[in-house]
Amino acid sequence: MAEGIHFYEPAQGHGLAHDPFNALVAPRPIGWISSRSSEGTLNLAPYSFFNAFNYIPPIIGFSSIGYKDSVRNAQETGEFCWNLVTRSLSDAMNQTCAPVGPEVDEFALAGLTPRPSRIISPPHVAESPVTLECTVSQVLQLSGADGKKVDTWVVFGEVVGVHIAQQLLKDGIYDTAAAEPVMRGGGPADYFTLDAAQKFQMHRPK
View 1 (cartoon, rainbow, N blue to C red):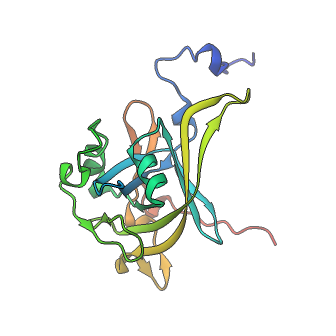
View 2 (view 1 turned 90 degrees about the vertical axis):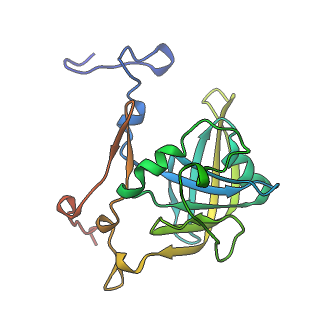
């Protein structure tokens, strides 16, 4: 082992106070997913395994450890929304982490307003400045390298509607820092945000 390097094989345990994996691949954008069950019950839940995966068509996806309400709702109805978590909404987002039953409406639990979407049935968070309306393109159960299925499900959705607060558009360009997005950092309770002072530009070579 190289001097000064902590090495471990995940299957044998990490030997640390807290599993570092989530903190190594970080900070990660939060998939704050709103959905509606086939019976009509609203659901709102955050997923820290979330990202964008394609431009045309635009595709995003979130990963759920366990077949949770968001996965079931998305698979049964074929629809979900992603809502941007901002610094001012972080406490409300945290409330929607509560381990409650599928009959509980997390919008009401967190004191948030469900706003009707333009194209799909599930509403989105009215207080969030950015929302992506999505139709489900794929739902995959993950497998390990040995081919065995694990209890983790990835939902991919094609973005069919985009809502952006006007104040975040500067000369037609979305101002990421102005939105103060909240990202998951790993550890027991670490989150990050960003501001304009952290921005730098670097163009790709031609």
